[in-house]
Image (cartoon, rainbow, N blue to C red):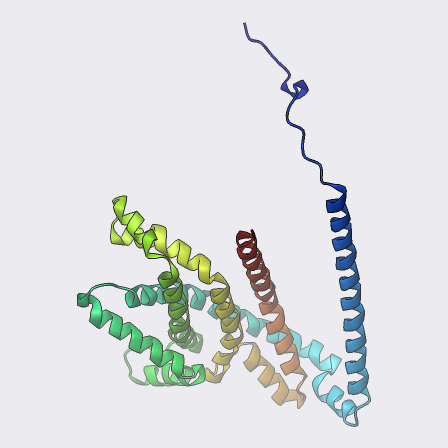
Length: 294
């Protein structure tokens, strides 16, 4: 026989109620937040109105409006630019995967211990120093026009070489960010993992890398935002992406509005990641501040 007892009716510890002083503090904070938000909205609107008035009253505004903000030209060029943007997204997708893999390998190579790995560390250091120093535009020219001229491969589309150039450049950035994260992990974490019987590879994969990635996630997200913008540079190789499609439209209608359309599309492409980066950075900062409160 079982005894069914309704535990909800049993007496228990009462939930602590906030004091009157704490309630007043919370109400004051809410009022301050609402007041700050109202001031921010009003000041932003005023600033936007002032900027708009300065622009529309400038002597050359009518010419600028016809050359850069023509609605009919924007509508006519939008479909071709959008198709070109899809090529940018494809290149960005594959480049991001390759950068993540290759950058991680470079970061691990630069953190290898032992004298026997000195040549690997040196090679990784030379690679990162070189590709962090050379402009991406030059890498695109060298890879897109120089490598095919060697004749080792058949003719490949220029977006392929653009993906390779982006991977070579941004892998060096990501490798240095990851290396900083790996070195920021306290040595006691490695010692504890090794004392539990984990080998070097498992310690790196299960203990060190997860903590390192968490420490440098905002920096990695910023690198990804930068790559979202730089993916438009593949147009210099002749790939018909959003920038190249806009250039073709500009040459056909003698109007710069397609460039503005392409710029707006790139902003819309990058905006979600930019907002996510800011949110994650603020969240990590709040967690650190809460941990430091006494």
